[in-house]
Length: 326
Ligand SMILES: [Ca+2]
Ligand SMILES: [Ca+2]
Ligand SMILES: [Ca+2]
Image (cartoon, rainbow, N blue to C red; front, side, top):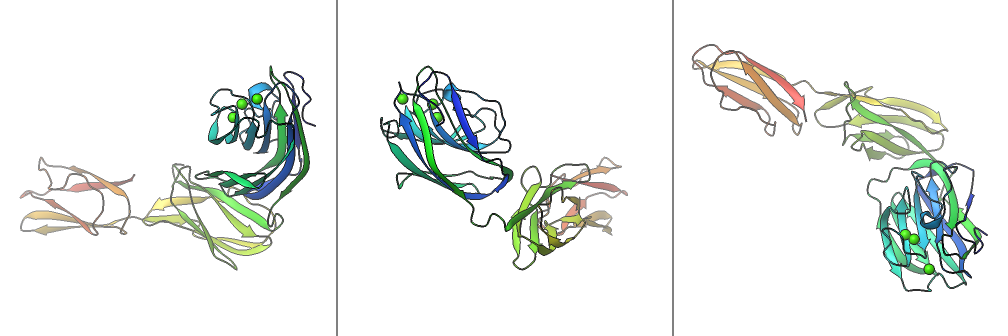
């Protein structure tokens, strides 16, 4: 029993065992009804379960930094309709997805069954064996946290009851992870770095906008990780691991742009500067010249390799090229 039909109360049940929240299937039965009509039930997966309690339209899910599937029975801020199934992040007003239900689909004082199938951002929500909600959380980053079910009432009320809770992961004890950041020397994130894991199976992962990566490994794995991006070198160039049985964080790589090769020739009294770099590198060229002569290329990206810079000068010109990654 999460709530009785009293106004402005909440109820929650959390499993205090920490899980790696990358994949799970959650099933349970619930009953909503017997009161004047609010607010609903959610299944939550959150980094901490002891966040501050709340009631009313927040569904006892407020400032959680986690995700939840809601079975909402009262129209509040940003709600699509009175009864709906939704995916919310952090708090109940923040819907990532929601689908409307006809009135008295779930608020009918009878038992319903839900199955919530989640796999690295891909969400399927079934109600009484019918698929209602499909959504993909782009760039979902698995984290350590807890499963729970909460419910609340507001000015209007209901019984909120749950039963037969079953939450399972395909291989909860076998999945471990290694995570870290790819940053340049100044601490700026390097995104789009392929982190390749070499062990029994080769698995890879890309660093995101924050330079953060996470890679799943089998329990007890021995092998190595390599960071790769065209135009970049990384330190260390390989990280070695032996018999890893816990999750490892802050396994960082420091990125450095591969230095270009610059050569300057004199051709018919003109200076030609040829600059070679690994194809595909995102590099911007800035220059200073100790004469008033304008070169034929001012700035540019290295789309061609090598890129040549023609300096039309009969006097001796010196080009200072500095490379700035974008
Ligand atoms: Ca209602
Ligand atoms: Ca609501
Ligand atoms: Ca809602």
